[in-house]
Image (cartoon, rainbow, N blue to C red):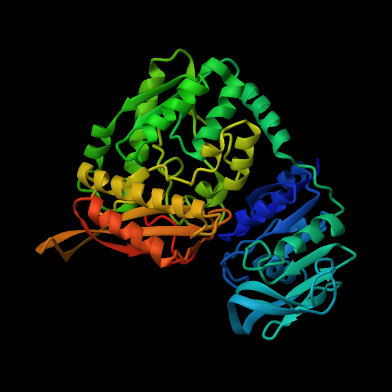
Length: 515
C-alpha cells in the first residue's frame, strides 16, 4: 500500500491535509518537519507534502527540513510556507508581498501544472501569507497567479515538484480536494487503496500484538470516540478489557442510563460505573481558569482508572478515545512547531507519573473517520452520529466556578436545546447536517422581570455550528421560531435563568467550545 508523508511546519491546518488525503483513500501520516532523512526513507513515502506554517523563511531559526529531502526523488507538494521553503532552499527567492493575503482570494490559472486539469481558469482559494515567492528555483514555472501574488502555484514536471501559495486542504478552497486528487493520482500515479474495513482489521491485530494477554481498563464516556475505541479494543481483547465510566457529575441529562443500556445490556461488555462526582466537585471548587479545570479533571480521571486497575490482575494498559484534533490542539505535534491552543483532558492533562501505559487506537483518526469505523464495527446510528461532547464535560460549558447547582441548571437548559433542535431537524425547519448544538452557562447575571417581580438570574448561551471535521466551523442561522421556542422553554422551565443569547461566531477565530 502506497503511503504519503506530511511534514508539519506548524500550520493549524496540517491535520486537514491528512484528512483530505485519507478521504481520497490514500494512507498518510504526519511527522515534524525536522524529521531526519533516515526516518523519512524508512517510511518509504510515495510522495511528500510540506505543510504551511506561521514562520517566515527569513526568521532566524525558521523551521527547515533535512537537506537530503530535495534529492530523495519522490514527488513533493509544498503548501504556503512549504512552497516558500522549497523555493528558498533550492535557489529561488522569497520576499514580503506587496500586499498580504489572508482569507478568500481568486487565482487565475495560467497552465494546468499538474493540479488544475478540468478546473475553471479562475478559482476561489484560501490564502494566508505575508511572504511570497518572487523567483522560482530552476526548473519550476509559475502555473497560477492572483492580483497581488505572481506565483500562486508552480510546477516542475521533471522532478514532480509542485507548490501552491494557498491552502487546498480547507473547505474555503472549494476545488482544493480535486487539486490534491490530481497530485496524488495524476502526478504521483497512486491508487486509492486505504479502506476503513482494512484499518479495523489491522488495528485489532496491532492491539493483540501490543497487549498480549495483559488486561486494559478503558475510559468510557459514551461519546462517539470512546465508544468506538471501546468496541475496537473489546474486539481485540474480549474479557481482558474492563470499561470504566466515571460519573463525574459533569455529564448531560440521561447519559448514564443510555450508556448502561448499550454497553451492558446490549453488547454484554464488562462496564463498571463509579460515582466520583464528590471528588470532581471538590477539585473544581473555586477554579475558574479553563486550563486548570481541564488538568484537574484529567488528573482525577486517571486517578480513578488507576485505582480500578489495581483490583484487576495484570492490568497494564489504559484505553482512551484520543483523536488527531485532540493532539493538534493540545501540544506541538511530536515536538513540531505547531502552537498550543488548549489542553485536552486526555492529552495535555495527564499526570507525569502515570502507572498505566496508554492505548489509543484512534489517535490518528479524524471524527468523520471514527464515525465510519463505528459503522464498520456495527455500532448503532444513535452512537455513531452522536454529536461530539468534550471529555471534561459540562465543566468547560459552565464558565466560571463549577458547582453542582450550576451543572444541574445547565443540564436542564442543554436538554431543552438538544430536544428542540433535534425536533426542528426532524420537521425540516433546520437543514443539516449539524456538528454540535448545546447550551453554555455564562458567568453573567442580569436583571429581569418575572411575574411582576424583579429577578437577578443567570444567562444561558445557545451554540449551534456546522462543520465537517471540527477543525473549522460556521455558526448556524437558526430560524427565529426555533430560537424563540428554545428561549421560552429555558426561561420557563429552568429555574434561575432569565436571559438566553445566541452565539454567532465561527471557528476560527473562536473555538467551538467556550473553554
